[in-house]
Amino acid sequence: MTDFSLETIRKGDKLALSRVLSRVEADHEAGRAALDALFPFTGSAHKIGITGAPGSGKSSLVNALAHHLRRAFPDARVAIIAVDPTSPFTGGAILGDRVRMPDLQNDPGIFIRSMATRGALGGLADATLALSQVFDAAGYEYIIIETVGAGQAEVDIVNLAHTTIVVDTPGMGDDIQTIKAGILEIADILVVNKADLPGADQTYRNLAAMIEMGYRGTGRINGGHHRSANAPTDRPEETRGWVPPVLKTTAVTAQGIADLMNAILQHQTYLRATNAWHEKENAAMQLIVNKLVLEELSNNWKQNLAPGLYESVLRALRQREISPRAAARALLAYNSK
Amino acid sequence: MSEKKIRVLIAKPGLDGHDRGAKVIARALRDDGMEVIYTGLRQTPQMIAEAALQEDVDVVGLSILSGAHNALVPQVLEKLKENGQNDVFVFLGGIIPESDIPGLLALGVKKIYGPGTDTRVVCEDIRAALADRA
Ligand code: B12
Ligand SMILES: Nc1nc2c(ncn2[C@@H]2O[C@H](COP(=O)(O)OP(=O)(O)O)[C@@H](O)[C@H]2O)c(=O)[nH]1
Ligand SMILES: [Mg+2]
Image (cartoon, rainbow over all chains, first blue to last red; front, top):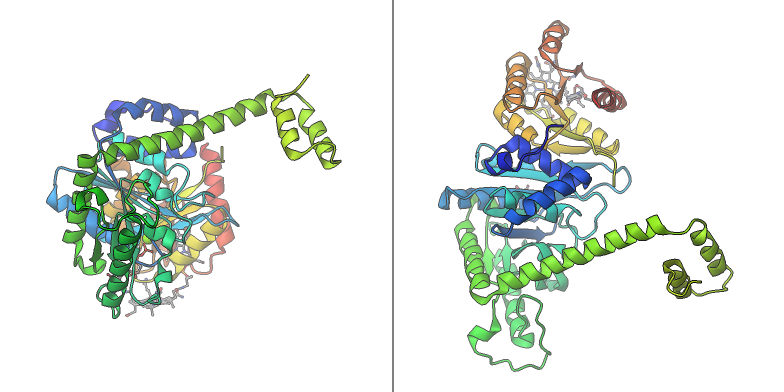
């Protein structure tokens, strides 16, 4: 293993970058040290999340969008993190998103990294945030993250991305159930992809109506503020915050991609103008620090546990001598001695 | 936290449209616990090496049934070296005439497989090659 150099990565050495990504993903000491060293250089990338059902065209959209971004801003480099599920039975994975990204294969300003979830459930892998930080520090201006897209519980992406794009398609049953409420709520931009297929207008109208109702009904804005359902409905435009636009795209012909890119840039402008950018960063930092604190606490606790204590407490618990909470407290030695 | 995952790129270089074998191998490796990056058809040696670089794979698996292996395989090997990926193992499968095998192995291909290959053997060979390296 060659030693990793911050300089080489920031200069654009792809081999060095790729190796660091692997080490960070493995979450071993070397990877953690690399992440610590890179962290001061993070904070400038615009992270864009793309989620939606499998087959809705996420990878194809990433292909068209990244290609478009590169043509519009030739100096901006684009990183792509494509997440696919790990098989719970074998621990293996087939990562096939590259197949749908043919336009990005020969572009030196693009770096695509496929990741398996390795057991994580929220639509991303545990190390997705960490990999995005590596790309950020390496100087990639745009980082596009494609989630697994298996269902409604996949909302981890909002904690990571500045802009979350939710993809729907026509013909998935035009009832609103197609996109579950939970996932709709996380959208900063809604895309009806496969607009070339019949039913696209219907899907578009349904989504537009939902957005319309949702925003008039709750006055919800992005960033997690939540007003009561009977809040005034006639608020002035500026206090309502960002209302997600609904766009039609045909990823395979790049129809509508310019509009999608513009919507992303507008959202970026909105985030910066309203301080929502920093709020998102704050929330993300808080989450990660909390997660790490818990992780370290739990490791420390395990290391310092008196030998035999766990077994004896568990025995007392099994015999109903103490309650589960009392057991936990005993293990943490809150009321010991 | 977890053991090191084996990452494999399965690629089809050239204009060859026979993709059954590549898919069979990709699935077998997945079922053996590996992470398989599949890049699809019509890849140039340049594209394959670039994907191997970005994905930091341990193994590149090429599937060629078109007869173009003598032209394509050396180019892939060369590009991998150009990118500094000297430690990646290259496995090859498909329709490779017996007489071409020694030359390809001499160039640096690790192993070569033909029709009817038992996929369990491929999994074992990959694990053995990586164990030797470590
Ligand atoms: C099915 C088939 C087709 C299908 C392909 C469907 C598809 N999507 O894959 C169709 C009908 C489309 C087709 C078309 C053609 N075919 Co065809 N086809 C075959 C056939 C009968 C079987 C191939 C197959 O799928 N086998 C099943 C898979 C699972 O086996 P496999 O690919 O060999 O893979 C195994 C091993 O080789 C190895 N392996 C393979 N890849 C890899 C990779 C790695 C990393 C590893 C470790 C192992 C490994 O492990 C696999 C599992 O055991 C072969 C004959 C044969 N018996 O091989 C001819 C054959 C390959 N075809 C041939 C030809 C000439 C053609 C055409 C040019 C015909 C024409 N004139 O139109 C076209 C070209 C199409 C194109 N665009 O490339 C010739 C190739 C001759 C040559 N190379 O010199 C063959 C050998 C027939 C022959 N005897 O002439 N074909
Ligand atoms: N007709 C049509 N097909 C599309 C469009 N976008 C993607 N597809 C196809 O939909 C399938 C799934 O696309 P993919 O990008 O892999 O979806 P993902 O699983 O969400 O990443 C592929 O066969 C694509 O070619 C589109 O705009 N129109
Ligand atoms: Mg995809």
